[in-house]
Figure 1 (cartoon, rainbow over the protein chains, first blue to last red):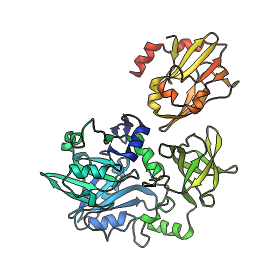
Figure 2: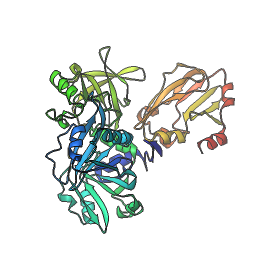
Figure 3: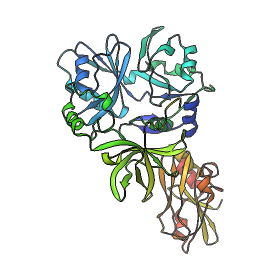
Figure 4: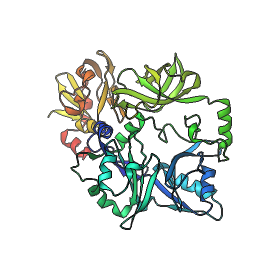
Length: 343
Length: 121
């Protein structure tokens, strides 16, 4: 167990590699209750979210979620979040480590009237069920048409008086759902999921969560994303609506026009050594970038990493050196993601 | 067992004027699945308290420290292809280096098995 943003969480249950592979082959359940869960109510809630989010939210329908960044005035990323449109309010799920930042930011920028912000984090729990066996399995367990739910859509309602939200989304590169329930139901959740001996659905911890998201090239705040980096340079221009006036848009318009100095790339290393965050990336003997995340990919059986490099060295196939143990080890820029389900 | 244990979870086994060094099962479990052990070349001179290599797992990379100064006389080459031996047999097949040392006194200050067991709790 480790302290993760103030939450006591398991790195693993049986083994990181074992849990990782089980997720790709069958199904794993991750307790992600540490993440921030906020609700915004009121007539001015949508406008507030449009003001702080890089993504266009105006055409979202009830039951839809979108990934977005929240940035400061300089265009630096404060957090990456999921915004969801319910019929009578908006939901925001944010990183545990940035929950206070986001709550304060929303409080700071909300108008005097028209927005009520509720932090529901400690009153709720959230579990992520991820893997190819999830949808078939829960379709038999829950009386909900989860199988018909499109990606980034959700179902919200009450079941015997218990409010639930089931999102078809995840952070592993596999199919699956993320479920929000009241914290008071926590003791019943393991039983609902098949219990300790279930052969299909097994618990997985933070270690596997990281190796899975890295294979799927999903960014992690504090690694690929932080307040010194803008979404465009982070390869996330797709979730930025430059035509919208949101906080931080001006610097981003300039970066988009001039082209970013840096690009986030995927790297495959020769050999088995693992690149760690902060390791220098070099071209010939010049430092041209740094590693943001690295691991030994359990699925691909290769050492993989993500990092920022100067744009001129970011083309797929470029040969670079990554400093490990005091020496530059050979690496090649590869296209992202490293892993795609169904391949 | 005639081993001594450091605060950084290395074990030291005296074999004449040679010291066999590895890491404990506790340390291997903390690292989780070990993917690579970077060992020094034979002949390398190690300082007391200095590092002799690195160990990598999917979770983290850690340095390996020697409590005694000496010269590396042998390294466990099997670990190149089977780094997982450090997880499965930390105290025997997972040994890492043999160090020829002229001064084994620093080992007196290390923990014995019971004290180490108390430390890891």
